Length: 198
Image 1 (cartoon, one colour):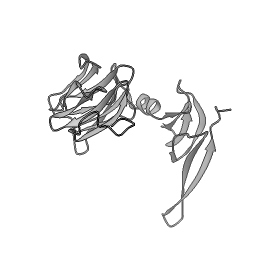
Image 2 (cartoon, rainbow, N blue to C red):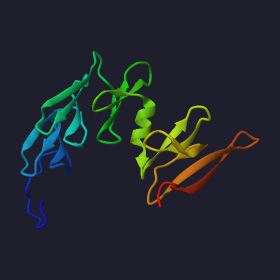
Image 3 (cartoon, helix red, strand yellow):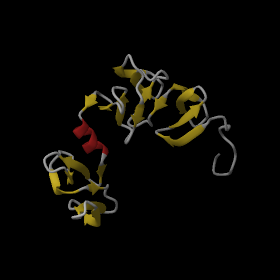
Image 4 (cartoon, rainbow, N blue to C red):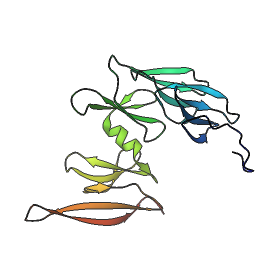
């Protein structure tokens, strides 16, 4: 609807997301795709999954879930990131330029990570997907604790926490698990200030 309550695009989709970069992600019986403000299917709903557009491109997973593509706003294939002989079982887009994929190897599968150019490491994925207000919560392999790193991967807040959430308005919630003698744990919850914000 427009601001006057007039129906501009007829209700024919299972779901429809807000417009981003001039297009809206829609889901139909035939699959997922994108429409413009006139309701025209610019990218027909033919994919199993799509991400939102960011900087002119989006991820698209074929309906058989065996290929991952990067498409432009006309639906043209920019690049093929993956072609698998087996169907992939899980897709997650924490940001529109990152993607987590679960491969059906073993009981829970094997996670692999992509940006729009290539496969990336889990560490790079976690760093890039967790950014808020200039810092990202990252797991330190040596201590098994979370701290916060900048965009270059430099640790700015020492890894002291068992859980670390994103920053919002200069603050983040953090948790520490304190073991008791009887085998249970107490959870200490606190709030830290973002040291890079003035």
